[in-house]
Length: 407
Ligand code: ATP
Ligand code: MG
Image 1 (cartoon, rainbow, N blue to C red):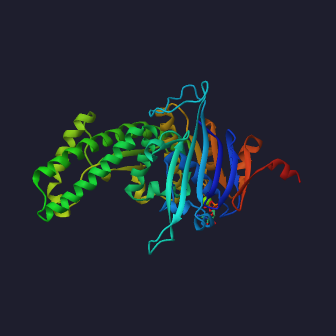
Image 2: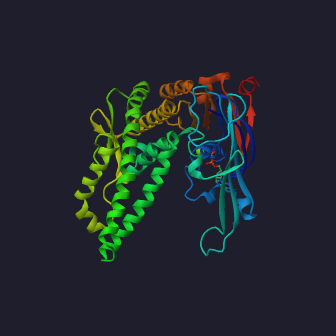
Image 3: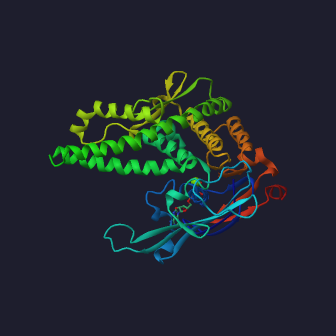
């Protein structure tokens, strides 16, 4: 799939941007704080329906626009010209002929807030696909994208929640039913935890607990099984990419579900019940659900050493890149259409050889957007085969690098 056009207004420091995004590789270069990550953030927002970095989506609204009660728009047109591409499972009107085309708009309207703390405004978010209102959940899976960012080192060295989030974003893009299941699970978890607290205070009936146990097992068993299935596709891809990037031979990814795996979704249900029984005493003491996919993790092991604790910075970077490449490959395999790759400053800490190996991998994807402060790191490899844009104080301008070189 590819993004053919992008319009932004009042998105962070990108006040007005209108971009025909070329197919193939496009490179966005500029100094620090000019809007490169903001651009990538806006594109990725079309895929995951929220910002990958904002604590509160209020932050996305341009400061001046927020003060004046204006609105922020991310407006993209995506095209699927891959004949093998499987349609989105949520029915959507298709464009003319074989090329499906959708227009996706994510908007935020700022209005004054009377809350005593905070920035003095709040935002209302609205999503439209081909003019129809959509929920965030139903947008995910329509635009496929994989983001490589400088923060990806956290996939290796960060807490288990970083790796769960990685799996959740990947599987949600691959299978929108997963995201719906995940949201149901989170609601059940909240209810069950509330009930555990009430029980500790002697205010809950035993049959109420039974009901929420059943719900938890039903939603959670399936999520665990789905993660296991996707790890089976992800793992060999990650091992291969890691080797190609020069990271050594013996990478092992090991899914560590909180509830032990048991064959099939039905087997998982039994396994989950047993796990709940085993933690019952602990749950009584802590009043928090102690078994389930909210406590999953996966280990990353190189030459027998757990990289979560012992990776060098370079090792962690290479592993993170391998995980992202494997994410893109898994998404391609499951959805039958290759995602848009977004590389935000992702190559800056690599040596030249490893950078080249990563850039070689981008050839497998129909559209790749790369940001960098050092354009030569990228243009040395792609030369005239990529398109170049200068990002400067929130403006994005096409730029002929070769001409610049001659002057
Ligand atoms: P770097 O090379 O350092 O990563 P960048 O080009 O990726 O820089 P961005 O992270 O895109 O920079 O940020 C661009 C600028 O936008 C920053 O100066 C930031 O302070 C500013 N900015 C962030 N949010 C808003 C907002 N809501 N309104 C206006 N400006 C904002
Ligand atoms: Mg940046």
